[in-house]
Image (cartoon, rainbow, N blue to C red; front, side):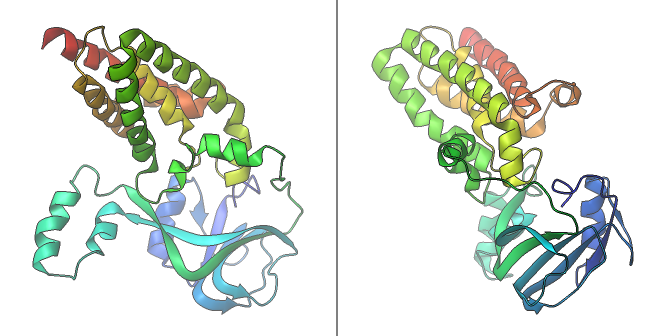
Length: 295
């Protein structure tokens, strides 16, 4: 809603856990309020929504909508929510079972257990309605191609750690190029991937934001291609093949924990969506070069 209707500051919840909502809103610099709030969220999964509103924007998560709460439908898509990774994995096993106690901790470490994963809200869709008309995403001739690029050919829509998946699918390709064509070709391909991915990320950043209704959409993983390629560009000639795999893990560590990376996101420059990944790739690449040189 904040992306479609700039300037929202207060939100009212209807049928929603207010404690959860208050914490989520704080991260977006929004405040929970009562009647008269700028925006409303109606949470009726699996039910029919019949609410009307005087707000500027309303998000409805329900089975169906009996009447529009506001005159202009701005967005409709399958309803999704985010839960901690440990909760998602925990749902694979019967509560309290031996598998839950043994496999759960092995599959989800404390370092990543709080990371969110996207899950569908069963039997529900999400609508966003606005009081005034808004500029909606338009269908373009090359929209499918653009979305394929920014999502890493679909990796970005994976519910669990899509950025890591996008990097992981690059590993077998990188190994094949390195082992079959040698270091020089590998470096050239990595450099070309970095340059093209960075340029495309900058060019498609705003387009993807309009299509996915977010400033830094979770589905946008083209920037991971750029960062991963930077790391591999530091691979010295003659390095063993397993260094490519080590580079993958190093980049993911720097990209996830953002050590020394956050500052670049505050700069008043275009392409913020990619520069943090490039910087993480540089850090990981230096460490990778050191490992290859001194081990």
